[in-house]
Length: 426
Ligand SMILES: C=CC1=C(C)c2cc3[nH]c(cc4nc(cc5[nH]c(cc1n2)c(C)c5CCC(=O)O)C(CCC(=O)O)=C4C)c(C)c3C=C
Ligand SMILES: [Fe+2]
Picture (cartoon, rainbow, N blue to C red):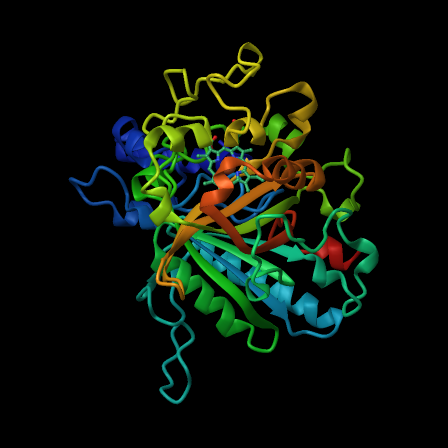
């Protein structure tokens, strides 16, 4: 359980105890926090759990939500160019975003304007009640925000840089980088789209969309609250070997910028976010023998177990397999994490989503992975691991086409603060 979830836990326990359904409801709710009052209102006899639309993630905290949060079913990445040209306007943008995120993630009645001469204040696509629906909106900044426009150059996170091409990449400039990136996640796609529409409606003079991608994981995996690993569009469980997000000491060690990093003080509590839009050649993959597919990843397709082992979470022992007889030396998992003391510094938290976006110009299925990972050191984390993966057997079936490097801002501690405040005041 993340620190943020811990904070929400007591009210949820009270709610469920009040309803007399703690055992069954807790199992079905998957341990997620609920909006106590709203869920209570909506609970009707015969219902085992309050509606998932009332599931709520806390907005205030040392870290932003949407990073340690168990993956919701729907996700959107949207990168923006900032239209503001001076620092005061950037401050207005960050204050506005903070206010919108705080409202949208907690939910409430949709604002109503009776005057038919004016545009409605809300798109209306969620109806009269804007349910929280487990929504998180995570704000990250790109390296371009630190150019001359806002005078922030001296305060740039030390490792924030433009993503450059790796050997297997075919990067499309229109799907790369951005001054800011929003990662919007919720139980349902309509909530994600509502949030995006709300944000765009409130920022016409401040933001222009640069690129956008929609992602998903299976609903049952999302509802398991992190217990069931999502399956990617190559048919493999993806996320098995992630570090334990409930272990806050480990998260401080791997994920969050702390005083131990050579980073500006304002960045503490934030995290480097690497995003890669990776297209799959699924037609070719689906004609590849099962054995070869498994050799490429180093895991069993169905169970997700490392090859030669029984269970998904069994830990591969590479020292007893020095020549790669069980798990090939160029298997994805072996290159990504050789599990040696000297490669411990490259551990990261992955939070990937599948995408499916019609067909390519060449008539092939356009689908793949929105790879997202978080770490406190971009060079030791993503960049080092990607360099180890260069030339891997999987490359024949994938093509990275976009993305970028971003820095997820520290969280907002309470109502009197806004996202990015310490950066702007540095
Ligand atoms: C640079 C980092 C990584 C990229 C890019 C990447 C792409 C990528 N991964 C899969 C599928 C799987 N990855 C798995 C494990 C895994 N991948 C990375 C890193 C990157 N993957 C790491 C650090 C790990 C964990 C390795 C370990 O600790 O053993 C797996 C196995 C299951 C799991 O642990 O998640 C799969 C499957 C695809 C399809 C892909 C891009 C196309
Ligand atoms: Fe991977």
